[in-house]
Length: 162
Image (tube, rainbow, N blue to C red; front, side):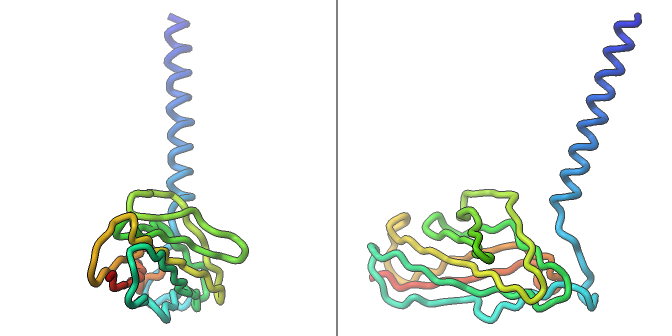
């Protein structure tokens, strides 16, 4: 009987500890949220959200960098970065650091905080050899943000493959 009580107690303690770990992880992985009229909210300034490379060949890898500035008063968090095709990759440059590579099939828990008045750079890389097509091509980079007026940021690149 004593052994059964000890085993039950140990199992309960393990479940409690796991519960605290899961709860703590879920709290630290969430981005702070703000209302749309909060004077202290982060504000994502996107001056350029699309770029056209113009005519190109299927052998030419194209790259373009989009600036993203936080003009708000709180940290702007960006996360859940994906692309619309495996032929397109995205990277975030912040200070001297570079994020992991993001594309269509890479899910990541990566996120970053952009401080007020800080600018990060979203680098889009289009490699037509990955999915060869001809004609006008449009690809997208999408990410989540905690800017209540722009919870999703999207960048578009276009190219005309000859």
